Length: 461
Ligand code: F0G
Image (cartoon, rainbow, N blue to C red; front, side):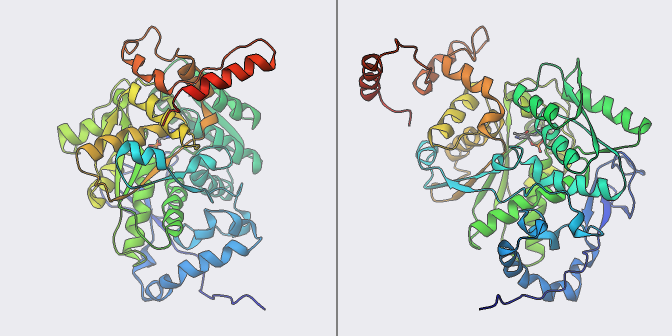
């Protein structure tokens, strides 16, 4: 039996850059990916999407994307490029720099659902990407375009995951990479990735926002392609997390997508995807996209609550969820647009709530890094506020793998995470979730005794 081939003209979708503030449209961009007229961020848009040809073709996309799952071509094996009808076109698709990113699982979270008070709770685990975070989905696109443009160097400022991802994609395509990170504020697991993938890694005595400022100066002086999420190609690749998620729901649209907020590129990307799918008639409504921030890095929340989303006041960010320790998020205007256009909201989670929620996700057998766990902590609040209803279908975007920050997890289970901090007293409530290793004599008796003890205690969930 031969496979029926779905023939849809896959001619390059023509794309341009559009400023999100003044709306000016350009075919080329400057090194900092900002509008040369007003300085705001650019986004990629596809003028031909409102053409008759697109209206004819779009309904066939879903079948085409399914069909590619059986192909052995590298760009079809990629869970990003498989959706290339909704991405900017490379001159040669087979030159895409891909680690077969995307294709991440959707898990149910039964125990977390009970804790939060909803009937159907899922995790889209973007930490199951090749370098362990959602960054790979955007990096494959941005690195491919950097290569196509002939760059020898790529660079990013990072709280750790962007740098790990960028260094890997650069190494795969023989580009050199410059990583600029805040000294002592990046988990060593993430740092070790950048080193192994051969990046020139510069630790600066400042925070993420300070690193970003320095790098913005560097890109003016050195021919390097900036691969932070101000690079709109990153956002295009990260859109595919939402497209894949809807495919996994078999066309059913969940009611809520809950995403952690740091530099606010990810929620911007997921929202852009949903709004484009709606525009193309591939869905008839969008889920509400809500953002959860750490209390100590809650600029978007303050912007929305205090300034109606019209102004953002940078802050000195502080949280043990180091991935989202960002006080001046670049994509805040894009995020505000997504919240407003999808009907989502913004919440925050305290340090204790983040730690507890992370352990709860772990106890469901899934696990994630601290920044991802803000989603469950936020969901609990949104249910209490009745913004999320008990019967709603909810998806948490888990952005990073459990092994991204082993130190946080070890300290948590050993009871050291909050020692000597202002949270020490409150942290007593976390004891029920802690599973410190027990040191025993090397005898079977000792281990059996430990089993008997464990039998008597209640499991965490
Ligand atoms: N979760 C994880 C695990 C992250 O690494 C990040 C961001 C976020 C959430 C927030 O996503 O920035 O798109 O709102 N990490 C960046 C980095 C900043 O440098 O790795 P965002």
